[in-house]
Image 1 (cartoon, one colour):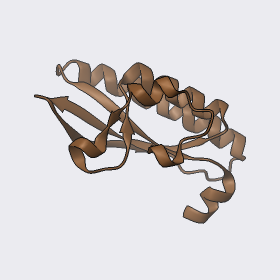
Image 2 (tube, rainbow, N blue to C red):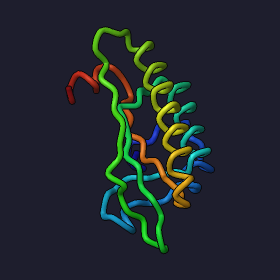
Image 3 (cartoon, rainbow, N blue to C red):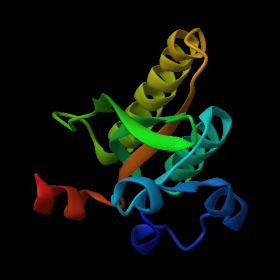
Image 4 (tube, rainbow, N blue to C red):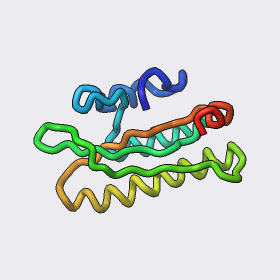
Length: 126
């Protein structure tokens, strides 16, 4: 998620908790540690934003790098509200399972979340 398409009601404390990936990778996105990423997903759901997917990054030796891992959701035959809830659940499941695996390697994963504000926007990008 980048700052330009943040929902107006998005908490500033989560923006300041994020890592700006542009500094490390040139990608204009924000990424969060596990607990903050979980909070982001829950807030996006409350704001009726669907989560289209996300990318995982790891901080190693002071350098943020993509792990090449990611997740995604496709709306298919769901109402928008079902998609919002299912995309949040899928995101939380991915983050929790990924963290368990990655934590064993001693690295700290960060999660960049790709969001969609509404069904009309989704139809434009589909």
